[in-house]
Amino acid sequence: MPITRKNTPSLEMQQRTRKERRFDETEQDLPDFSGKLPTVTAALSTKDKIYSVLSYLGLKNPIPRPITADDTVWLLDNTAYRNQKSGLWEAEYVAAMFSQHSSSALVDAVAAIADKINLEECDPAYTTLEERLAPFVQDIKPGTQAKALYRGKLPLKLGPGGHNGISSEIKRLPDADDGELVPTFARVPKGANGVLEMKTFFAEAEGWGVISDIDDTIKVTQTSDPIGILRTTFIEAPQPISGMPELYKHIHKLIQPASAWFYLSASPYNLYPFLRNFRQDHYPHGTIILRDSSWMSVRGLLTTLTLGTEDYKVDRMDKIHDWLPRRKMICVGDSTQTDPEAYGEIYRRYPQWVKVILIRKVEDIAAIGIEAKNEPERFEKAFQDVPRDVWHVFSDPETCREIIDDVVSRH
Image 1 (cartoon, one colour):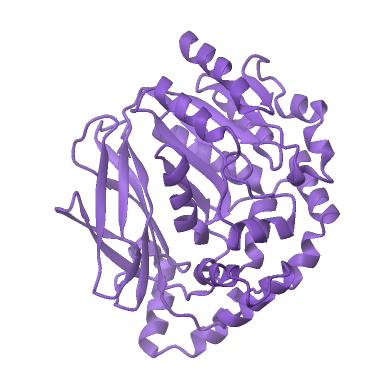
Image 2: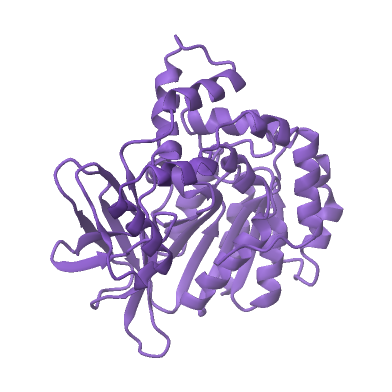
């Protein structure tokens, strides 16, 4: 579903931040190969052109492209829920398919970013930059269908994907226990690579759930600084926000292992393996939900993180509510983007669903030049009509333990 950018106070704040931090200037010098797609398409074989045209039919595509030994496949972890009408288990399966190769020059893209962040070619981090940048320049494979085995036994067909190389569809699943994690494995030719195993978390209708932002909520990203985004995304080892792994461990233990976790980020799908590994290293298992709007565009990374994030997040939380409307949700975000506005809106839509909102007040380098984002008036406006004991702004994650303990004991 396309994200509509309404002229809201949060969007105005995002645009002001972009202007103050000179995002446009930085973006102008970053590689964007999405505009070259018509040229690339012209060089394709007749067969590939047919696949590309048919990809616009999405799941109705009658002639899907098969996975080859030269392809990359990502299977994304998901959450299964019971269909409210049938009572049967189902889940949204998302897969991304693209070529291991690129028709665009990786070396030029690497050089452009290295220049922006003052990274010398002799620096050991240069190799890291090349590795993390690769998913942004690999050619997408429109209209491709992936085969997989649920529990290693039940055959599944995922896709065919759309013109962006991503497939998304609801699959009915066999019975399973609440809180169970079930693997699905991609069936690919020898040579194909990617994230070839995913896990489905089964969540019954009732219980607790957590919706958490990623960037500058649980991971240092510096979303208010374009150079900071580039450095933390492409060369630095991902760092958790101090105290947040311990807080999430406490929450997970308190609300039981059968609680459903969702990591809702404005980052693009290109970063899925990077963020999945980060989540596995520091936080409870959960479904990572990302934007699909910047394939073959490093420039798009900065845009997705800084524009239209409120509408995007509200749209995705609507979907989570459709899946699990009777769960009791804990929402965690930060002040750098539009988490207060998004969570405020979702509470006003579903006041019985959201039990507590925690907003981390970012006061480090990511907040330089955007002091207005931490003003009390901003939070009061974002949480208009939300009871004062529901939303909390914090600096030290340790102070959230008592809040969470009280909320869980009351509900």
